[in-house]
Image (cartoon, rainbow, N blue to C red):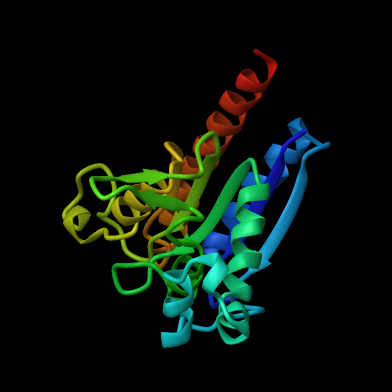
Amino acid sequence: MSRILRIDTSSRTDGSFSRDLTDAFMEKWLQRRPADQVVVRDLAAAPLPHIADVTIKGYYTPADQMDASLRTATALSDLLIHELRAADILVLSVPMYNFSIPSALKAWIDQIVRIGHTFSYDGKGFNGLLPGKRAYVLIAYGAGGYLDGGPFAGADFVQPYLKFLLNFLGIADVTFIPIEATTADPATIAANARKARALIDAAVAAASLRAAA
């Protein structure tokens, strides 16, 4: 049995392609692995605050020197990091907003990327402290041309950023499942949805084979 942490980041609750794609992924996953536990954090339904000056001070203060104000300022970070550490599998549901990630997701990232908790630095290099986990990132692009070396591939700051970030934290096993051109005509959207569903099927089947090995 695995524990899954699902993070939803789209501001849209109805008509969201990233949420719909992630729903399809979770449905397929739980069909094969019904005993897995799922924890959902919806960053649109419950937005996170941006980190403040006192939060940053708390990040860089040794535990034995934390006062009450610093402990309060970092309490949310502690909670979110605990959720992430407890998960075996991270599922990120991400729409592209203006060539990058939603600010709601960036707020979560700023709370969980924390020295001494999710990464370390020894004066010479960085080391991720979350090894052994897997991540699935389901991305919706409004326009086409971002995938397979298309004309907008260079403007995709979602996949490269999230891959680097997750790897930095020690999560080396990252699978991206995209759908693009979600603002196109119905036939194009349907065709791209079929491609995305095929990627979901392949990813879940591969995970099941790993679990059975």
